[in-house]
Image (cartoon, rainbow, N blue to C red):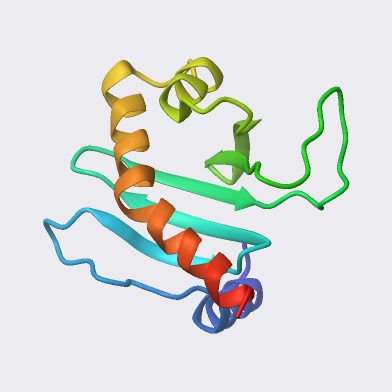
Length: 134
């Protein structure tokens, strides 16, 4: 990346990426966030790993082999600027979905990602949905 491109990315990061939200050296939770209830990017810091997720709300009438519309979310895991896997939250057991889809992660990382989403990301994302529906 040349200097000009680097400067452009720095400006865009400052404009669109919100964070760090509450992070200090030994904290866990949401470090950076960007987007809204339709599509949100989360950088989640755990005790041992950093996860980058894009969470999207499909359109209300999206159908694949199942009805994907309302009440489901699309989760994409980003590693090294590439999507490493994703799933639609059909199953009520999100931990099993994460384990099945992100099989390249170690068991500890799977649990850590689930706990970060369940403890931090989920409530933040629900607040975004609530703000959208006001």
